[in-house]
Image (cartoon, rainbow, N blue to C red; front, top):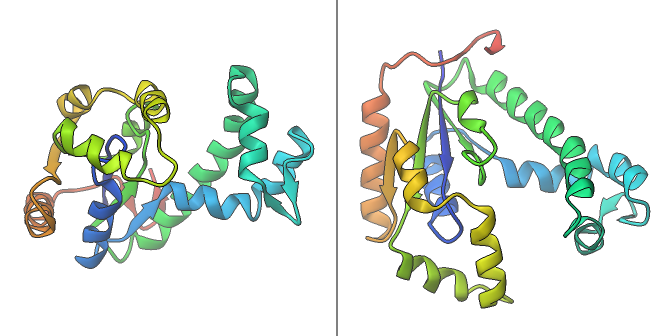
Length: 204
């Protein structure tokens, strides 16, 4: 049985770098953001165009146009989520079926895991964290980032302290790559031999 470890963390906390560490250690990782990106170039595009006319060009969702169509409108955002979320879940379940016979641990990299109740699909939750000053420095260094954008993103995310309180494991990314990898290895050692929720027949 494959143990499903949910990986999450607020913006700038080092989630993507941590996912890369797990991949380097041989752990299969499903990236929810990458799945959305692929869906926007594939199965989701015609469904989104039908719901939000003019947001797809040449079979690919135009993210700025889609953003303009849904941002600030909760009903439209819910309509978009109703299209995209089930498709992402299908991709996630297909991933878990593929790796169930191959891996003792699989990672689901989901940015808003706790905010959306996604922890119920995991055997344990790993939250990546860093001091607020480090987080701010990382985020503000991103191209096009402004103080207003940063504040708006934080408002959508559960506070870091609350995430850490709900985590089974916490990984501090502020001490460098080697320290983060050591923590990841320690977590995998803790999980060794633990029964998970995914068997050869798939998720469940």
